[in-house]
Length: 481
Image 1 (cartoon, rainbow, N blue to C red):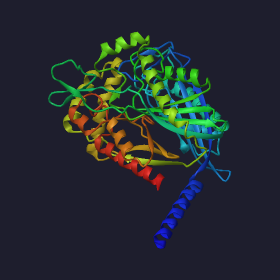
Image 2 (image 1 turned 60 degrees about the vertical axis):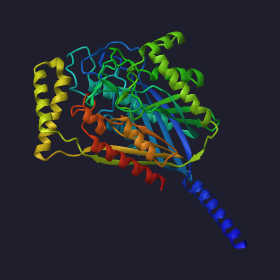
Image 3 (image 1 turned 180 degrees about the horizontal axis):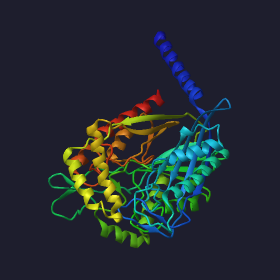
Image 4 (image 1 turned 135 degrees about the vertical axis):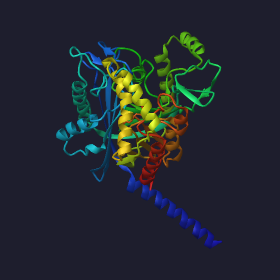
């Protein structure tokens, strides 16, 4: 009996020792900084996100870029850093993050600029940031390259402010729920899908996949327990008012307004779009009931969406404020990942060539022409055997017991759920649109076809999507070893 007791005592001491070792060896002193920049253009601009040209000459709301700086210090020295910048634009087009890093490197040479990443809210009422997407008028409209240069100046300034003004801080996290995302791919008899297809048709059989209604929330505090910043991860793009011809931050604007009114005018709100490439805020059915409820509440659709997000945020806060931590592990892994391009069949290439020819001589249809032409060009590279892999930058961050991981795609919800389900973290934030990789559909979506699943929409296909899941999960396991 005495031997059994001795073993039990020894195991208890060992476990306590392990807990203390993990707590002291891997917990860092957290420093936090945040800053917000106004990236609303001062001139007329072309808007991104639709297949037709729209010129915005006024702004219904400001567009913002919000920088969140996290630094872990050990023995007084910086151990690791993560800098997240959320931007009210469609996506982080090629060259944008590189430009920000170049500007930061000149100003803050001590900072590892690889630890900076940008992510987009996917509002379709923000400026174009890539030349050649639309045939723009020769005068009176700000060029995309001009806007990018102007925008990245302000983003770099926000990052610098956040870094230079960082203070000893604390962190907590929680999870709420907000029904915002709606699967937008209507499925019909014969396993055929149409994005935003009619749901009142006799052949309608349902929506293609599920939605993720979890709201992952991060709270950053100063040492006096005053809320400095919050990051909100929701698996839905911000495109409720996507067809407007004016600048608009979509549902994130009323969310920020409500939170700042209730919790401090200087609160930095970092908006993160989760895995929601196959969803949007648009209702696919139930419009009359929704309209009735909104009329009785006295809110429009944006107000209703914001109400749900804020309510879910406050649910998360109730729990998070019970467990605010000053020392946590901060680890940031940056990895280049190679994914295979989606294979193009000869039939798909021929169809794309035929469609491209319809738009070839019409400058007003430049978007549609390039959309189809890219498939033909990919097929030619594929046949010649000189197609390079799709390169993406993966960021995997451990912050205490939670994880944040990035991808550049409009990632379908199923992939995000796979990552969350297999993650070793207590809670996982999947951050999509940290780049410009197009839609990444599932096998089921590719079989059903439709916009968002055809080769024109999807540089990377399901094979690459599954590889992305595996690489992401392995990166997280590395951080939890």
